[in-house]
Image (tube, rainbow, N blue to C red; front, side):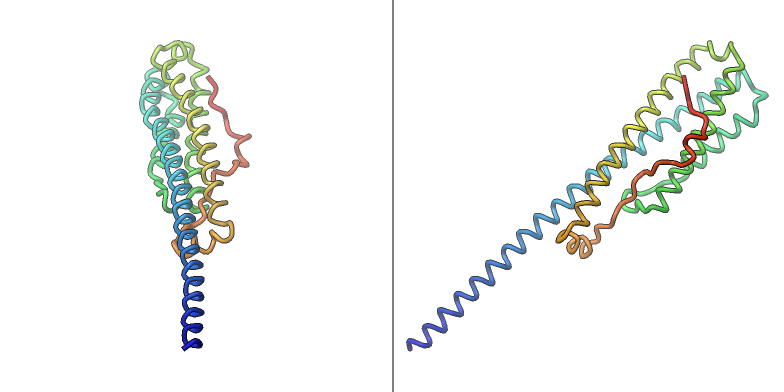
Amino acid sequence: MSNNATKTGGLSKNTMIIGAVVAVLVLWGISAYNGMVKVEEQATTEWAKVQSAYQRRADLIPNLVEVVKGYASHEKETLEGVVNARAKATSINVNADDLTPEKMQEFQAAQGELSQALGRLIAVSEAYPDLKANENFMDLQKQLEGTENRINEARNSFNTAVQDYNLKIRRFPNTILAGIFGFDKMAKFEADAEAQKRPEIKF
């Protein structure tokens, strides 16, 4: 009778210990999972801001092209270059759930080509004093300048959010849950080696 009670008591104690360990692991798992969801949401929100900033620039370009065309219609190659670069840049959509290095490189390259084309367009305007003095042109220049600043700020904020997310999912033991639940590493904007060769958009 005494032995049975001891066994029962011992079994109950072991069960309690195992239950406590399981409860701790479950609580840790919930906390870690929710933490990864939070930083992932922050990164995808920042990505939406990046896309919005680039879209704002794309929306300004048709008006800019029309104004320039009114004063420099024979600059056909430059005007077509901007239109074509805009079309390419806006055709590349990168989903926040698929921010791979390859997709980001493709997106960044297309936006870089558009920056180059815009730089050439602004450079052309220097040869047309009447165009430079046009009120609509000056207003569009100011809007583009503001948009370029927004793009830069959005990219920096996105990179910071992605860094936080990547660190969160790669740290042990979070990396175990990240693998189970499909939290994949996100790509950041990288410094462009060609940036120094590109014509800058100066106003």
